[in-house]
Length: 315
View 1 (spheres, one colour):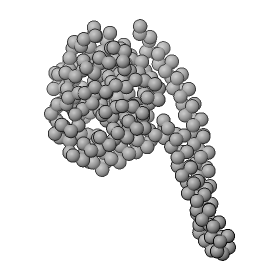
View 2 (cartoon, one colour; view 1 turned 90 degrees about the horizontal axis):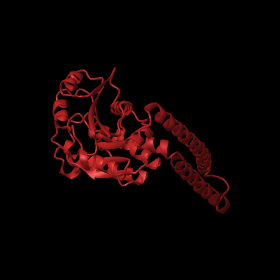
View 3 (cartoon, helix red, strand yellow; view 1 turned 30 degrees about the horizontal axis):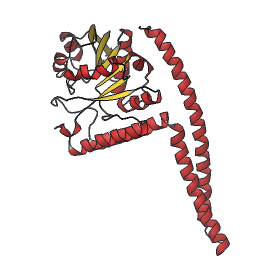
View 4 (cartoon, one colour; view 1 turned 90 degrees about the vertical axis):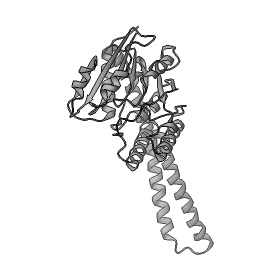
């Protein structure tokens, strides 16, 4: 059994030595433990630092492509190197490496396909009260739309079984954390959360430049994920809402038309017509989107089978 710990890095030369120093070389249940660094177009000495501190594999992206792309590239490389379980962690030493055995245990016991480390949000000193609130609200929303019990949806400290890693796709260029949860549930994977500890903050978050930016990006990410993985529900909800609003306004027009005077209230008639038309078209889009979603699932199944062949079947 081989465990590969992957670390997406962007200009982490200062923090990477601490991170690698704390990573284990021996984990119960595995005969091999390797480290893989994904250099996301760093402009500092991240690659040299990784080599000097014992990284087994290093991938260099020619330019900065973002966390989601680096994560996906790392997963592909881990599979090529024969990983049975893959752990993803951060290069800033945010997560406590002592929790790695607990993170992989549910997979080794056959109880989970993906394990997510749940941070003690309330106890993280460098999180502002507003950020703590947003983290909790975001996790609650993801639990609702994904129908899972994930306690810390934005956490990047995760373990993936080989089969789960082969089965995942990441479309969002910003972050993989929310999308992989929703997608995994759609594919009937078992997701488990385990409590983990965090280390002292070594640098500010690069994903969160400001709270407004964090809220905006998270909202856009969630909407895009909802459109991709719940297209029928998304468009049918909008379509029916518009159609119902147009229908009610149309009833109002008819009420005044037959009760008081046939003249006037033309604006209501126009608005009702527009809303009914847009609502009906959106309902049609919902059915088309649902057909496209079915086609996407078929293509993903084909892709999964091809990946199993490409990466080799491990018994």
